[in-house]
Image (cartoon, rainbow, N blue to C red; front, side, top):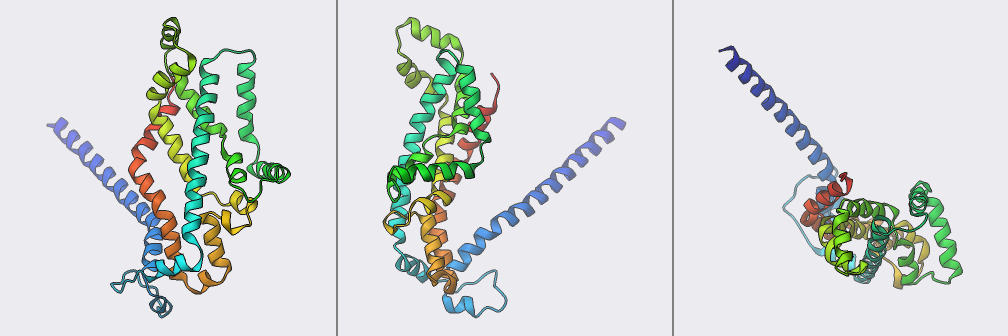
Amino acid sequence: MNYDKIEKSALLKKRTLDTIIYILLGIWALIVLFPFYWMLLTSLKSYGAYNSEWIPKLFTLDLTFENYTWAFEAVPLAKYFLNTVIFTLATTAIMLFVTVLAAFAFSRLSFKGKDLAFTLFLSLMMIPSELVVITNYVTMTNLDLRNTFAGLILPSVASVFYIYLLKENFSQIPDELYYAAKVDGTSDFKYLWKVMIPICRPTIVTITILKVIECWNSYVWPRLVTDEQAYFLVSNGIQEIRENGFGRDNIPAMMAAVVVISVPLIVLFLIFRRKIMEGVARGGMKG
């Protein structure tokens, strides 16, 4: 009888603890999601309705989509959107090529000084990003690559963290597979393409998604290396809307532009969120 009471008491404590945890997580979710809700709600309010609210309303049925039209008319937002897509796709593709080959070299190939080279390579993560930005800016300027897509893309095609993450993932693949493939006469490139990449696909997908998000949200470097409107990204477009006075006067239209820019990343994350978590978890596992 006492065992039943103890079991019921333990079950009650567990349910109580779970309830408290879910309540706290729910509150935290509301805090995190509220700015997105407010951004979307503001973008659907008319200019007059927004300015007439002495106390901001958390809900309204008087919605309008005219702010989205104004946002595209105020600046060439569609052009910035296209530039960002080109920049993101090109940078991510080149980064994947460099990352996969570098990770394969550090994880499978044997060459003199490999461990020292990898240690020095990892030490680059300790260099402040501000110093890298200054160095990249001077280099791109000397090469006359400012206000070009090459100047935007080249400094972002290599990532020490992504190479390290994929290298650790590659290292978990048994060496026996590699030796067996070499006995069969398989080349290193074919082994990489047919064996390693399929096995480590979740991590590669994760790296791809994270790089896309990084490129899409890029602000400091595009703002620094481009001052011609033809090469502006969406981050530059938002800043231009603010600087030309339109965004300061018409907050709903400003929020509409932000929604247009944010929605692709939100949708991308919602679709691939499980693969992101799976890839990061696989990269952190020890073989």
